[in-house]
Image 1 (tube, helix red, strand yellow):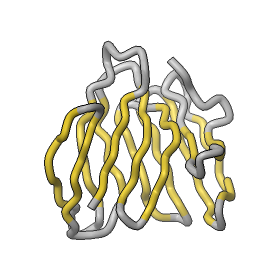
Image 2: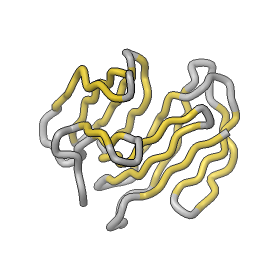
Image 3: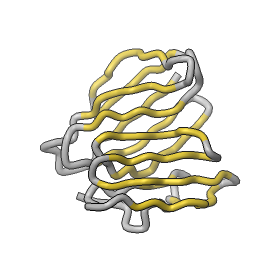
Length: 137
């Protein structure tokens, strides 16, 4: 399984990769600047959390490693790895309906709450490769 050794990095495709689900102790990296925004990541085995400009963007329990996280006006897409199934919450537009795809499966339509959070479960155990997640309006 892959991890992001430096905790957060910019990718050539315009996204970011972050998180290290193999860490025994919590580590964080603050003030990572990318595309005019400032990111903060906290990560280890039991939790991975990402903030953008002080606002919630991503959280998983247990911890995950996230690759090619791309945020657009229409939603987010990313690849995720972990040692076990994860509960993932992403920050999006409040009270908005999104179409969710996990791997090759259509998980259906989901609506964010008034805080803009959308929660989903991703089966990661038993996979050798990262699982693709796409959330779009």
